[in-house]
Image 1 (tube, rainbow, N blue to C red):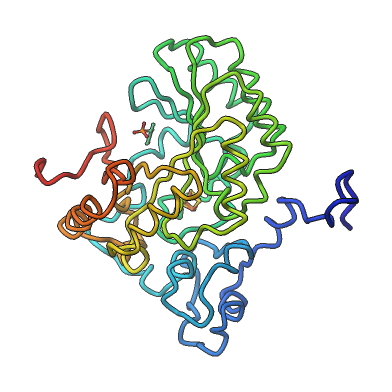
Image 2 (tube, rainbow, N blue to C red):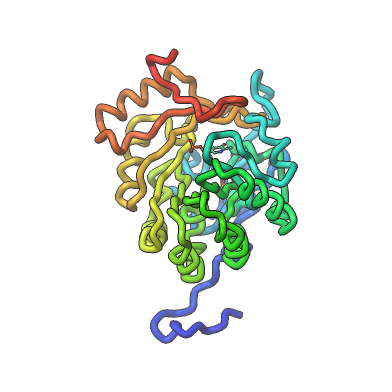
Length: 341
Ligand SMILES: *Cc1c(COP(=O)(O)O)cnc(C)c1O
Ligand code: SF4
């Protein structure tokens, strides 16, 4: 039962983001039927390779009907190829698991500390490094936050706290409030950055309570979205981005270069243009983390560089993302550039 809100005189009550989250599709047969591929039993995966299927219905609605190669569908539908064993593809692709198992704070780069604020996501992306680590909500436990914040408090070189995951917006706004209260008396922390896929896959998450919290934070605010294809944007996503900007956030987008999803120049140009139409600047284009089960998504560096060359000729410089790879032990994301090879 959905209770009426004060605004319901103006508009019919809508389900809250929690309900939409719970209502996600988790069954491959149901997903295929929803996109008009119910008759294609050959597309039914034999199993989920240990990483459950999960996708919100609003995201499914943006998939092209009847197209087994739809770039959104390919990101979420388990495939037999996930069982392929490929050389160089590891369980812990970026070597973060030691830190993730502790208090959840990763301080690998100067001035920036990254907190694994939550292990949950509204969508399970098949290429994700997280597929082998179904770490749960407990990462957000208060005791661990205290420990993480104690580290941030003690190290005055940390200018920016990054909330990541999983998806930090899987936490209630109340929880996020608790967390940022702990930052209130830390003058060296001037910026809060949130890495999240939720405004794209479940834009209803960017509700009034959330934007009010964000707007009142006495920090610089950056929200890094994660969209891989122009079709991930629709009116609801545009509106969510508008609300985030109105709350004072700078919006950036990071994508992963994925074979069959966005590894052609038209798709990438379209993505960069479409995200900017929503007020979002392209930030990074990541080479895939080499995680076991995702090898079929990999695009080699030569092809990636050729694509970047095309993007530079077809887009204004400020809409060209930086092609990078994350490597264990590096002091930053590593740019992949023609001259550096
Ligand atoms: C990616 C990452 C950051 C942020 O790096 P930027 O280049 O500033 O976006 C910070 N900390 C960790 C541990 C990271 O993996
Ligand atoms: S962490 Fe990001 S890429 Fe990985 S499953 Fe969650 S939303 Fe998808």
